[in-house]
Amino acid sequence: MDAGSCNGCEVEIANAFGPVYDASRYGIRLVASPRHADALLVTGVVTANMAGPLERTLEAAPRPAVVIACGDCAVNGGLVREGFAVVGPVTDVVPTDLRVPGCPPHPDEIVAALRRFGGR
Ligand code: SF4
Image 1 (cartoon, helix red, strand yellow):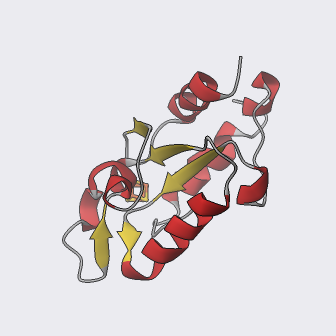
Image 2 (spheres, protein in one colour):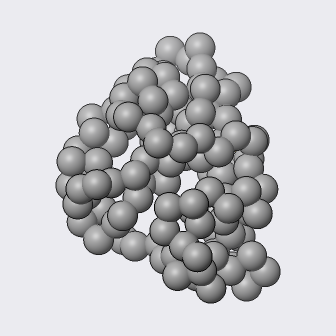
């Protein structure tokens, strides 16, 4: 879920699932609905408009749902933490199980984080 990202983290997530890093070879898939998800991969600092949707997205996921904060903005607010429309990092809104730092994180680090929970 993009909670307020610049889209840089999404580019690297797309690379993590692309042919070079290929997270799917470890049995990890991106799904369109939180109802089909074992984990929420959250990017971006949480903006005021996205705090409620983030909470509702986690509520919609089957339990136990893992929350992974992906990128510096999601981990600690990053470059825009003092912004007027910013609530804070992901952990200020929903409980966070794993943090993947970097601006943006390298696809290898994203794949390694996902493998800790769902892959082989
Ligand atoms: S961590 Fe960097 S790349 Fe990711 S959303 Fe924040 S500014 Fe963009």
